Image (cartoon, rainbow, N blue to C red; front, top):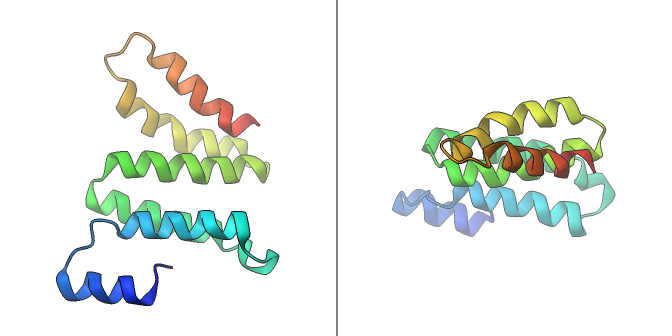
Length: 113
């Protein structure tokens, strides 16, 4: 979760712009450095970050979080779920571009590995 101080400042100032990013970074730090018993909560934290980003209409942030969550799910063997999450999100960013399919394929590659 975001640090208690960051949460307090956000509530007091109604500045919640970076709330989803706080959650995303917390999850990433758990995956990189966290003790094994806390790493399992990274997926839940990423799902919370994704929910916040969606509620804020922050599509770029949603893309970052979806990529991280899909990568985690891919490592857990949940590749179908990861692809289902990534495909529509990548679609927003590739509409109108000739190489759109390639971009989605590159995104899906991160899930496959």
